[in-house]
Length: 210
Image 1: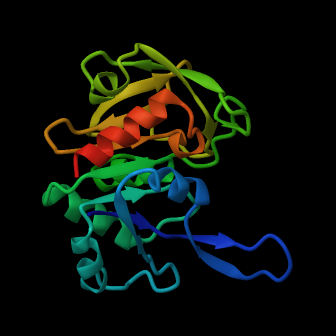
Image 2: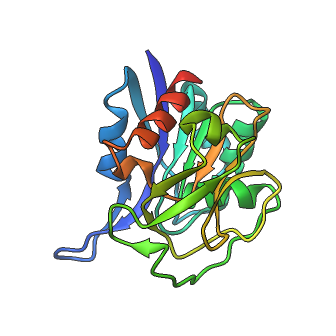
Image 3: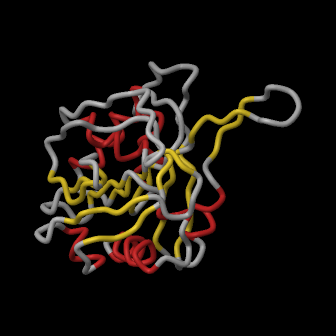
């Protein structure tokens, strides 16, 4: 059985004492459960960001592919893990913050405090994407445009990677490297759209690349 690693994120407990938590969204876990894979949690130590990569390498090496999910805040080791996976050509799916980490690890930039209702909204579908016909994303969804959800306050103004899709107001929504088995990041949250055919196709392609 293939193994999918998920990078754990730091969360705040919103009910009762201010207790920090470490984990990932249940909808991501639930989406992956439909596949015949084992899920491995990969802990990132946000309190001690000088932690050596070799302490995580043995866990990462067990994974046939890794998901970098959304969340708040990154650690230096995030970028070390991304670069390692890229170098060994291990499949990576980046979601929201995960895509931003992928871009920043390779000369990209992340702009914070981006306040736009078209990109930070709780609705199921928020805006359209314009998809590059030459991209892997187009090969996956077979559409020039799709509707996506959106809940981010940071964005990428540029990246060294191929850009597969832009929003209607020209925000980068997908990055990829077609020379790898699967190295693709999306700005939206496909895991929160479990019945959406485009989301299913995206996860199907990631899993098939393992």
